[in-house]
Image 1 (cartoon, protein in one colour):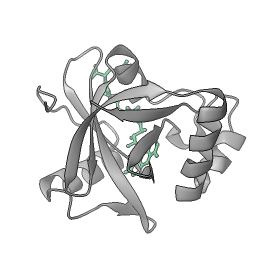
Image 2 (tube, rainbow, N blue to C red):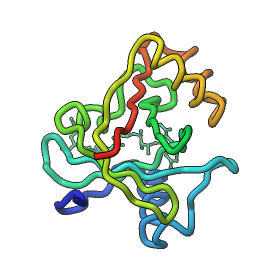
Image 3 (cartoon, protein in one colour):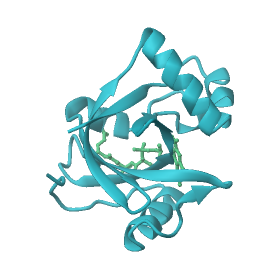
Length: 144
Ligand SMILES: C[C@H](OP(=O)(O)OC[C@@H](O)[C@@H](O)[C@@H](O)Cn1c2nc(=O)[nH]c(=O)c-2cc2ccc(O)cc21)C(=O)N[C@@H](CCC(=O)N[C@@H](CCC(=O)O)C(=O)O)C(=O)O
């Protein structure tokens, strides 16, 4: 069941432009950054109730996805983290495929497994974790 609500654009220009390019092309354009694949996560704003569309690096293994709240190694979580915390129902667009998921933050060995997969998909994640004391959260997306 797709998430319903009014879309509210990100205040990050580059992210907004990429999300809108991907969405408006039905997932056929704008789906990479530095040659690495990008997906679009849709969350429900935990304050506005609006739909937030966030481009993220694609982290996939055997048909399962994870999303990484890295924000370039900033000291604070990206606010989409708090959207998921309040409502774990999300949508993920991977190219032309859009599916519903329930996001589950992972810890311990499961997080390490997915963190290794994330760094393999997008090596700068390792640098981001190096540069911050913040534990960068990883969510696994369970099919809804
Ligand atoms: C800039 C901010 O967005 P954010 O949710 O903090 O997310 C920051 C970034 O993670 C986001 O811009 C990502 O798309 C950046 N980004 C990646 N960010 C990552 O964290 N990980 C990635 O792998 C990643 C890859 C990536 C690839 C391409 C690209 O273009 C961007 C990429 C934003 O849009 N803020 C809005 C509010 C958004 C929001 O969700 N508001 C909530 C309330 C949130 C709250 O305050 O609790 C609501 O509507 O209720 C605002 O300031 O008005």
